Length: 312
Image (cartoon, rainbow, N blue to C red; front, side):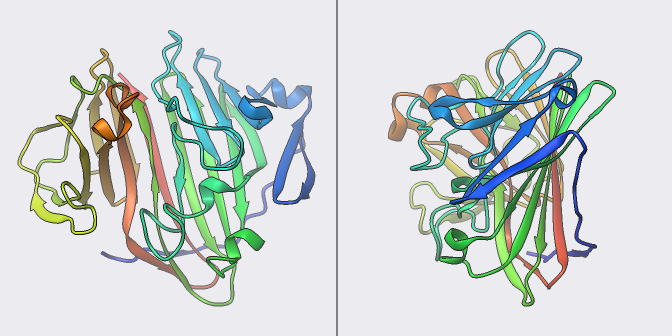
């Protein structure tokens, strides 16, 4: 897998309508004044009294982002339908990651030398910028290293996550910056849960991709090639698609066709746990943009990837 890095100057993001508040005990909070709220950005209290950001576009769409994990938990299009899914076993007590929506996997995707899917989904992100462009709210979150992250991954880094909400789309841009004086390597993914009818859901655009199929043995994935025009979810599915195209299309089986475009997310993952989660597997599928191969960054270099999800 090719390594991708770009040298950039480290950004400093500020905004006159945002005020940064106490950063202590691993917590990061922000308050907004009336001007910021008019931008379609509101910080409020969510489940478990955790702070969340509510984005509202002029076109009537809405998104919710929890600062814990930097997790987008809801994306409602103007008719009120939520196209993301949060599992019924999700907890909002900071004892485990939020199970659903769009969680982060960084600096490790899947199992490995540190905790499953890394630590970015277990930490509080902070707000560093917000704006509104033609009725479309944009917010940027930040995560930096600390005692918890360094206990398992001893590097200094900065992660910036920009979320843009439009009437029929939600876009994200993830930037990983090496702020250390030594190189580091990582893998990453956006573990997106889409609301779906699993028996009717299918994904197009993957035909011809090299596959690493983790069914039946996750520890010894089988290499292969995708021959299907439409990939569905007949049972347990956990499959990596290497060098995936820059657009996939999800038919969620509920009457919606969702375009999932990306830049620099080189791979894709399809997942549904089937009977391992009998209470909810019928109601969602995961279609994930990922960077499975190891990306190495030299000091002061960065890696950037974007995702654009839209409804037709």
